[in-house]
Structure formats: structure tokens, C-alpha cells
Amino acid sequence: MKYDIKGIRNNDLPEQVTNFLNYLETIKGKSENTLKAYKVDLTMFFRFIKMYKGIPYDDNLDFEEIPIYDIDEYVIRKLKLSDLYAFLSFTEKYRSNSAYARARKVATLKSFFKFLSGKAKIIDENPAIDLESPKISKRNPTYLTLDESKSLLKAIEGKNKERDYCMITLFLNCGLRLSELCGINISNIKKDILTVVGKGNKERTVYLNNACIKAIDNYLIVRHKNIDKIIDKDALFISKNNTRISKRSVEVMLKKYLSAAGLDTDKYTPHKLRHTAATLMYKYGNVDIRSLQQILGHENVSTTQIYTHVDDEKLRQAVNSNPLSDENTD
Image 1 (spheres, one colour):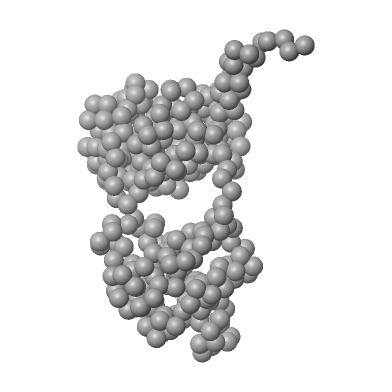
Image 2 (cartoon, rainbow, N blue to C red):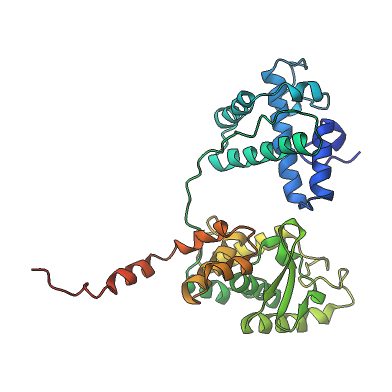
């Protein structure tokens, strides 16, 4: 049987975890990446519980090898809030999990136990209902300046320059996620309207500006020259193997041009180009926060608000615009 992730097959999971993941996929429509993250978190949690509670297993096994398929309802019903905090302490001290990683695990546990108490009804009391998430210090997003963005675009050359220029142009102008860019179909483009599939398989409308339209048109001329070789006919961006381009290929491509432009290849990623698009729109386009939320496809406006704190120059100008700023106080 094919392994799903990190050596864990669905039938190696506790029945309750499998039921929970099936619910998230079929009813809640969660993405594959979200399901994988939940599976990893719950696998680690129940391995810890087995070790912490002294549930018998082969002591010669490494932590990553501890089987959890035999965790049953009896074990789950006995879990308390203190057990959940013990797990979070374990992930910090022995797994070096950051506050962000632990916060994700808290979200996973809350969702899992809410399912068990509400939908599955196999526990009477939810031990995670009062589980608190570690405080995460908010950091301003990393992004390219306007001049750095222009330098990146100027650095694009070579055999696939039309395709690569088009991809980076869409990143910098539309704020697309990497998965959204790779998933673009030609049939999803209607004049200046692009439909992408974002998180949770939700469709989002993206409006293309002149730079994007021109880049797409120039790339399609080159792409159509090899139309007979292309396997994924509707995929917009095609790899050297004539199939839909992969996320890894885009990451490698970007590093090449970042290096050519003299920019930090470790600091900037496709997701940082998404930050760049959002920042440039907010800084130069006078885009309000709600519009930016829709453009980026954020479910909560709180996620978008990080872009309202990035422009220190605006704050400086605001203070200097005070009519008393030039008054002599002597």
C-alpha cells in the first residue's frame, strides 16, 4: 500500500483520526496541504501520548516509529487538558518547535477534539476547549522594494524568458500563492479576468493589469509553437517535460533570477513575492484593507492587516504633515 506522508498510512492511524481527516476532506473541503499538516500533528501527538502515558510499545523503536493504530476510544476519553499542555511542552523542549509551530498544533487539537465531542460524539467533555495558544510575535512581512522588483524582472533572460517573465510578473502584480500560479489553466483566463483555486479549494477572481496581460500574450506566442508536444494542454505554465510546471521548478527558477539580480536567494521565496505584491499595492495604490483582503484571498482581514504596518515612510510623512511641524518652539 502507498504511504501517504512520513511513513504513515491511513490504516496506521487511530480510527478517530482517520474519521476526522475524512470529515475535513469531504465535508469541510480542506486542501491536501491542510490534511497533511493535521495528519502530521496528530501523529506526533498520539506518539507522545503513548510514550507519556506508558502505553506499551517496543522500547527499541525511535519516536518516529512508535505505532499509534491501536489508540482507541478508551485512551482518548481519558485525555485531559494537562495532557495537551504536556504535549506542547514536549514539542518545545524536545522537538524545538517555534511558537508558530506550537500554535498550529493547538489549532489542530482544538479542531480534532471539537469534532470528537460535536460531530462524532465519542467524548462527553472537550479537553481542548480551554487550551490556549502560545503568543506569536507579529513580524512585518519580508518583501522586495519597488526598485528590487524591477531589477528582478530585468534579470530574466534565457531559453524560457517569456514563461519566467510571465510567472514573476503575475507574482509581483497579483499576489498569487505558489500553488495558485502553478494551477492556472488557459481556460481560466477571460480577457482581464483570471480565476484561480486558492486555499480550501475556493475559487477567487483575480483582475489582470496591462503588464500581466502583455506578459501572458507574449508567453502564449512562444508556448503555442510547441503545442503538439504539450501533454497538459490547458495548463498555462509548462515545464521542460511538457507537463504542468511544478512548485519546486518555480522555486528553483526564482532563485536563479534572484541571484542574477544580486538579491538574497535565501531571504526571498515565491511567497515573499506575494508579500511584495500586497505591499506595493498598499504602498503605492492606495488600496484599502478590505480590497486587499479580497485580492489576496485571505479568509480573515486580520491576516491582511500585517501589510498596514510595513510603510514607515508613510508614518514619517504623516507626522511631518502636522501643521505644527514647522513651528519654532523657542
